[in-house]
Length: 353
Ligand SMILES: *Cc1c(COP(=O)(O)O)cnc(C)c1O
Image (cartoon, rainbow, N blue to C red; front, side, top):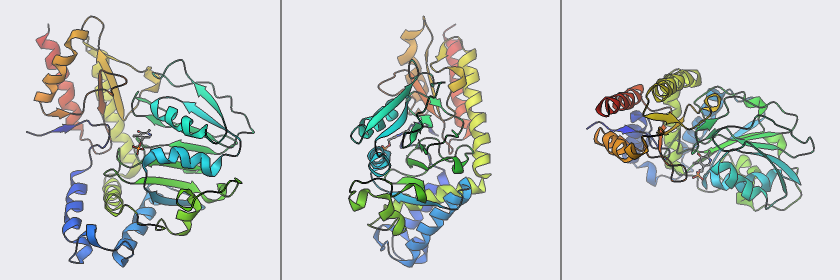
């Protein structure tokens, strides 16, 4: 049976990315050996690394003066590396969910954190009083667990840093407004194991503390992201995903598809009396769509879960901290999968009449 993959991460990748990765694992770039067993210093991998960095710059229109590096350790390591490298005394963090909270926990090890918060995580803060003496402002562009999303850039007079783990390359952004953008690749880009970092070179070198080489952005910039052995397989796959994005209308194409998918599903959530969305409408994510059974129908949750799983839908269970349902509708998810979910919701409604 055809599967509809709504997992939040690791998550769906284009079929062609899986196919090209399998091929490269068998015979990489015509070398007759596997991507898994070739030196990362080979000229073939050197090219893959450069191609991946350049294509990320091309797709996101990254201006001069920025570096793209691919690191290990996940977005979670960035929660510590960001303040380690960039915080002198004080930073401002938008606390909009589980991942933002985790980032704040690490930042507090290095200095004072000013938190900007809404009443709860089902909506985004609207007031941003940002002290001008802060070293930077950090926010999570898409809150994977709660399903809220800032669909805009911040223009501030302090450096802006964003965790874009779950919406990178899904919508247009103005990179020049950011000092740094980072994320784990396993949501929208690649298999788990690589973290992308887009960083403005001139924000570095402004803190006094000693930083271990591996945790220092400058080390990885200076070595072309090859200071140590990089995660070669997910970097290769990330490059393939970016080629697929380019062939499918670039970031603009992804943005259009994301809006189509999300609108289709939100419209059904709003129309169908059995379901209700959990997020303030103006803050709804186009990547992670959260909903629950409506008041009076709570007892149907398990039944709907097994109804959809019988139809080949996987990964619809809400995060364990939120409950209900979450459909992750990342770049690679075909609109057919969203249509199938909408049809299942309608069929379920008829069954319950
Ligand atoms: C998944 C996720 C993380 C954590 O990523 P890891 O690579 O597992 O450390 C951080 N931030 C956001 C927004 C995420 O969605």
